[in-house]
Length: 492
Image (cartoon, rainbow, N blue to C red; front, top):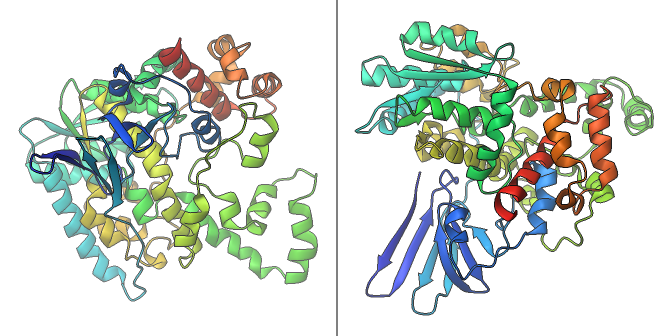
């Protein structure tokens, strides 16, 4: 992981580069072809007296679709992100700059690869990656959810250091992964820190979370990561985490959905197209309707990454922010991935959207807020390159995800961790808001800034639907709440 800048005294040039997948951030303030300042945080650029702070409506529009901003533009006009795998050369004489791509990730599956071969190779690669990521002259620990990725990290780190490590888990009292994590703790004998948080702690942390993000990211799990990082920093300076394993080894359940949907092909074609297609897009509501709609809808028309708030069609009905001048070109990504299988296309989309805009942004900013350095062994370029060659049969097989990765570590990490389905950082946001939405209502109702973008009727509708138990509006309400907090932090 890296972002670096080298000054060439002879050429009077700055050479800047960002790592392959965007583990570390880089922002710059530019107007036209002139760059004025740059940094790893937007807040640093806001201190530049030459910069006039204005809101970028394009970013807000996309945020309400993706739950983060996928554009290279930021929420602040004229402040941009350098994309992963790109370099920038700045002429310090006239402030002109040029951006070039040095790395472009692609999948190259080898159908002849077999599980006996991958068991040894994956194990060796990841052991070596963890060993390299453990190099430090300060204490190194590991986040531990109890799932396969974090259990691999914690186990291999312990084996490499030959001593007990500090491990960290967080959750609410009745929604957590404590038992799963404990299985690995018992095996590796780590010094374990279990953090139980409640609704008030969660909500009270939101303003700080927004401030450290610089831009709104409507991922409820970011709060847990922020709180856990604060606890971890009391004991270690570096922590290992499992980001990237799902995207590269095929870990999300939604990737496996393709094989479930293909079972519909067993239904006679005349019934599928004359009856089921009609039902899928009818006005009738029934169990399995979304499943049918996904079957009959082209992937590129329904999948923009692992998270979605509003579809573009639904957003247009409630959007009040004026004309959108820049659209994220997801079609370009699908064009590059057109020869992949559908699950691999989804992986490719996630690596270029969700992983970059949500997962890695959250991982870096929520930990660096506490001066905790998060390292990601699964995003080692050698590991990701190897994973890019895995065929689907070694990612989505035996009714599971990450098949090759899980199989490689059988007997090394607890069996329960090998077989456990992914949960991530579970939160109780939906139930918390249903029981008490006071904080959200106070900030969102009659909020003039939010109403510049989303109609007042839509805001009230979301609140009423959720309070009355007629639907789950928690993610959309959370996104609007984070947007309102961001405006309050940076513009009020």
